[in-house]
Amino acid sequence: MPSDVIRLGDALELDRRAYELRRSGRSLRLERIPMELLLLLVERRGELVTREEIIEKIWGKDVFLDTDSSINAAILATRAISGGHHRAQEWTIPSRGRSRQGRCR
Image (cartoon, rainbow, N blue to C red; front, side, top):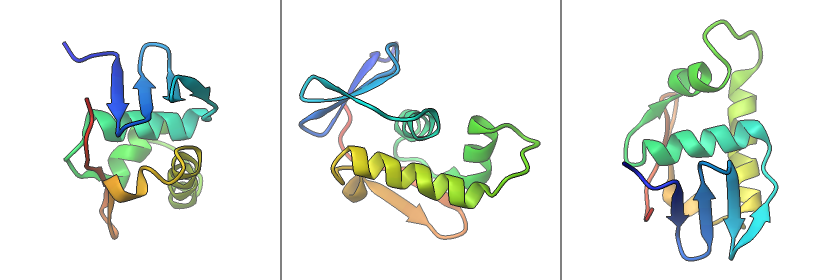
């Protein structure tokens, strides 16, 4: 059974049970969409998560909004709150999706 707390690098922790991202033990405010995206990418780390999978997981199948802009905004929000920490561990495959690489403990 996977741990509820996942370390992302040296200072960040993602607590799935508490639905919380922490830096050095301090809670960081992250809106629902960026948090859901971060959880999805961490759970599927090392795998390509297509834009379609992201859309279905976060918004559902029959969504009618600009999901590309929403996904991009969510990625920017996770980068901003983590101090850019995720940028080096995140891969974008143009027109396909996203993948999170890097150390998770």
